[in-house]
Length: 199
Ligand code: ADP
Ligand code: MG
Ligand code: MG
Image (tube, rainbow, N blue to C red; front, side, top):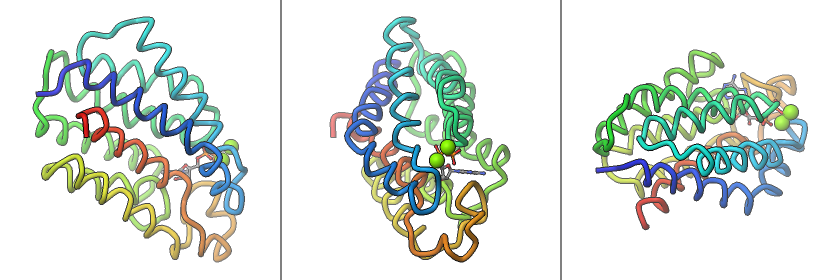
């Protein structure tokens, strides 16, 4: 079972890897974006960790709803409302249970990913964070490690794609040949689950 502590560790682990990879995320956002993805998420996840420490949410759902709200209010870019919606809607789907099973979490995360697709209008293959999140959710029933690998492969598979959503889509065919920054950060988020579980 996964308790509130697990979800706090997930946010802390994600903040740490976003910090470590911030330059790379911003570098990926340079040729096909506006070179701010790393700093956007650094600011966002720092706010998440601070809020979680201050407010001490005591259920899985409360941790994720709080985290989502922080991302929405502190990240100016497109990714803030999208990641914020992902976590907020996943948290809402978990309700107020003190502990949730991995299967319940996988179902809730699917609800969150669906909400992101509805908000942003992106489908798999559009070269966005969705290309890492959908395969991760599909593999989550197996294990956190399988979800991490699926997300990493999904992120790498965005390189030959032409962007159809977000800022990168303005470049048309020139967006081909670059890995999507949001899919790359989504793989960091998914990898955080394994770290939170002690892997
Ligand atoms: P901005 O483009 O506003 O500067 P960021 O650089 O923080 O925002 O985030 C860019 C990432 O957001 C993209 O790499 C992509 O993965 C994701 N993204 C942008 N628009 C969408 C969308 N409509 N649906 C899903 N993801 C999107
Ligand atoms: Mg950007
Ligand atoms: Mg921007």
